[in-house]
Figure 1: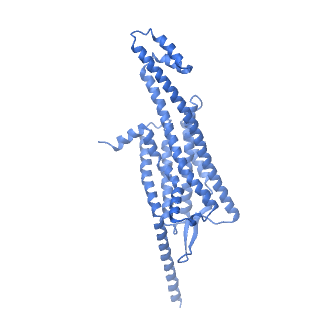
Figure 2: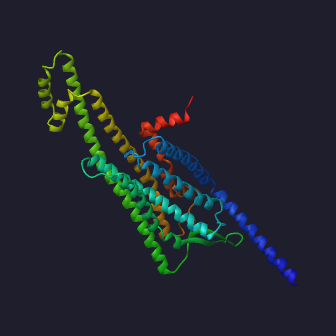
Figure 3: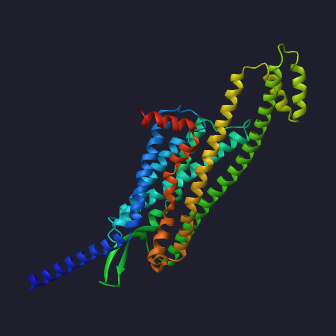
Amino acid sequence: MNISTNYDVAFDDIKHRAFLLYWNEIRAQHLLPNTVMLVIYLLIGLAGNIAVILVYQFGFNKNTDGRYFIVPLAWVDTTALIVTGAINLTRNTKPVIFPGHGACKLLLYSSYVTTCTSLFLLNVIAVQRYLKICKPFGPQMNILWNRLSVVICAIASILLYMPVLFYYGIVDTRNHSSWNISGYECNQLPGSTDQQKGFKIFQGVGFFVTIANLLTITVLYIVIAIAIMKQLKKMKVVKVGRDNVSVATLDTIEQTYVPSVQVNFQTATSDTDFTIETSNRINEPQEKHFTQTATRKSTFRISFMFMAITIVAFLAYLPTCIFIVIETNNPAFWNDLTPTAFHICLTLRRMYMVNHFSNPFMYGAFDNAFREKIKKMFCKK
């Protein structure tokens, strides 16, 4: 009697596990397109960020102010890719048999922290570029403040997303359509009405911080872009003036015509600073002027590079923020979608990962020195 009962219990347990694994396989196949996309993200992102770390960490002067934040940002993005890739791939391949309560909490928490740290660093970079371009004669961020700001960004993210450890974990999920079996997934934990209100407040704070960061960065870069355009316009006026000076001096043997050239150039612009600079430039070595101009253009190019990085970050984070708000207010949102709509929405929901692997392409597009280093490292004859 007891033996028969034990066999029945064992058979029911085996049957339940078999149905659970089969259900998991069906769900995993349904999520396969997104899984392939995540693998591509990881392969491209890890290769790109490791290349960035190698080039900027060992190929450039570590104290170079303009590129200081590139290496910390690359390390954060690499960590974020690994963590977010791990949590999302596990959710895709083991959607109803997620392995462990602690793994769920730790991976989700690390995902939020690294993603937020990356966003905070972009904010710090925007402030640094603003001070350098718009307030060049005011206080600047020195190497100590650069290092301290990285630590502050990490600590702020760690503290801000501590509630993730309390609001997320392993949740039972049931298949009512075929076998009436239950599985377990990594998701928001059920709770009382007060707990649900607390969760919505937490999500609201996170959403507000993300949007406030993106808006702050956007405003700063708009101001920076306007300042750069003005400075480039003035540099163009000076270049035209210098060309006129060169033509006039080529037609003379002695420097008796220099004062008349200075008077003519003063009438060409009302900017006193540029009049003084050009008047003195006649007796200065040409190399010094070219070096200063190249340095300034390099500063502008790096600023435009960080602007492009921020634009990509904004476009990557925005859909994710929107879907977080939708999920918070409608927990059954994903269950009501058609298969096509589900995959489109899931791709947009996880689009924040684009921010973590796109930066190397920006460095390659804007930073000539980075391109040259990459060619030397990987294109040796």
